[in-house]
Amino acid sequence: MTRVLIIDDEAPIRLLCRVNLEAEGMEVLEASDGEKGIELARRERPDVILLDVMMPRLDGWDVAQVLVGDALTKEIPIAFLTARAEVRDRARGLDIGGVEYVTKPFNPLELAPLIENLLERIRRDGLDLLRGEKLAALRSLVHE
Image: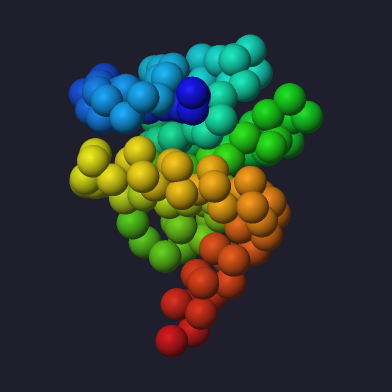
């Protein structure tokens, strides 16, 4: 069973994600802030993390840097789930170590397939290759 950790300070977003992911047979863990999210990620080692950027105290950028820099959590793929939709925000998320970037508002029915596809590609090609592909795609978008 795929385990997903959602780190988002907005309870309605966590609920929306939970309902849709559990309906697809995934186990969902939730954290309402960055510090709790880091603690849960270290303790539970989920298969993937959905991470909001704009949170009080410890924002998603800082959370991602901690997780990517920690031996216990550095191999857990991070998908940013945020209202910050500018190209520079996407670039920052991928540069920090995220592998996916979903902008709010999003279609909650697309989350489970996105996660399944992401995990399949990581199993097949590895996390570093996927990050490299995402960064290359973003660079080509910027230079168009």
